Each structure stands twice: as C-alpha cells, then as structure tokens.
Length: 110
Length: 113
Image 1 (cartoon, rainbow over the protein chains, first blue to last red):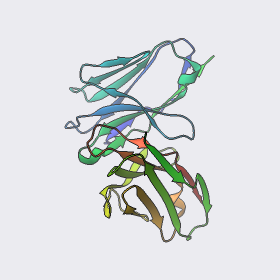
Image 2 (cartoon, rainbow over the protein chains, first blue to last red):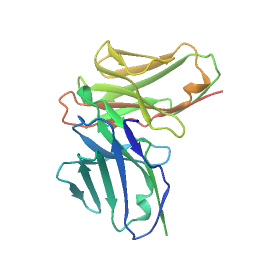
Image 3 (cartoon, each protein chain N blue to C red):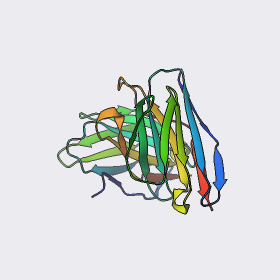
Image 4 (cartoon, each protein chain N blue to C red):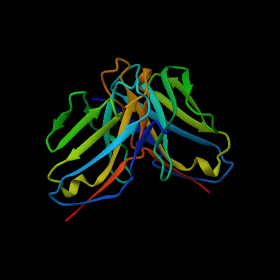
C-alpha cells in the first residue's frame, strides 16, 4: 500500500459549484497533514495545514479522520483560478520528511 | 524574507552525460534542505535531505548523489544520466525549528534523451 493515495481525477467542476476529494494514508503514526496546490509546470505551494478538529480558510475546508486514515479537502463556490492539482501531504517523521500523494487534478469549467 | 533559487530552469541532456543542479537559499541560516523528483504521472519522490553542511541522507538508491558544500547550497549530481532520470527536480527548504513547512524552489525540468 502506498504511503499516500489520491484519486488523480480530473475533477471537472462547474464554476460556482462545490468539489470535495479525499486522500488516504497508510502510516497510522503520522502526526501532521497538509494540502499543497500545484499549478501546471510550477512548484507546489502550501495551501493549508489540516488540524484534528478540522479547519477552514475562506472557501477551503480541510478535515482529518484518524480512525479511517483519510484527509479531505472541500472547495466551495469554485473559481476558474482554483484549477490546479491538489497534493495531499503527510509528515513521515523527523526532519520534516513529507510524503506526497500524486494529487487530485481539479478543472473548473466556465 | 527567504528565497530559494534553482538553476537551470530547463535542461536537455544525452544519456550517459553528467549532471549538476544547484539550489541556494537566501534569508535564513542552517535550513533543512531537500531534493525531490516528480516524474511524469507520478507523485513527488524525496531523493535526498540534509540537516547541515556535509550531512546527506538518501531516501532511495539511485543514479544520483547530493552534496552540501555550504550552509545554504545544495547540489544534485550524476556521473552518467539514464533515461529514467528525466523529470521535474525540486529543491525545498524548511526551518530546523520545524515551525515552517517546505518551501519549494521553481524547479528544474530535466529531459534525458
């Protein structure tokens, strides 16, 4: 089983709609979780951390389910500029060694 | 503020040729430094990380090596490139205090022919 698994998509989303996707992780001892955003042919950039109680940043909501070992990201009121690949990231342990999923590709359609 | 540089941005190299990619960080001291590779259709794979000058940890056996000759300089090398070395190479840094997540450089796109 891979460390971090994501359904690559693409997720075609009408502008203004809501889209949600999950990622699963294999190491039950993982403590830190994040979502990164990667635009086409660019480097990944931190979107948000994922806290145990769930957290929201504007139109973005992240949640963690430790029992089932998955993380979710929900985007409300999708904008064209939200089109990107969203990478699920899990901290593997010391020295900030992060494991990345392949990403969920989101395409917002006008 | 901190800035991370990588060069070159794009590189086309023949099989069997050597490789040297450089990464430098500005505006911080004693960072943790990382090399990742993103191959087509695959996720980001951690290749090497370094917690200090001359300290290199390899995550996977491969055709590549890394060096850290100075505090804020991280170099990725190969003596003989393989076709499978093609990919998007990303350098990243984080604070050793752990209070900051990875910031990535702009990356080098390598094509081995």
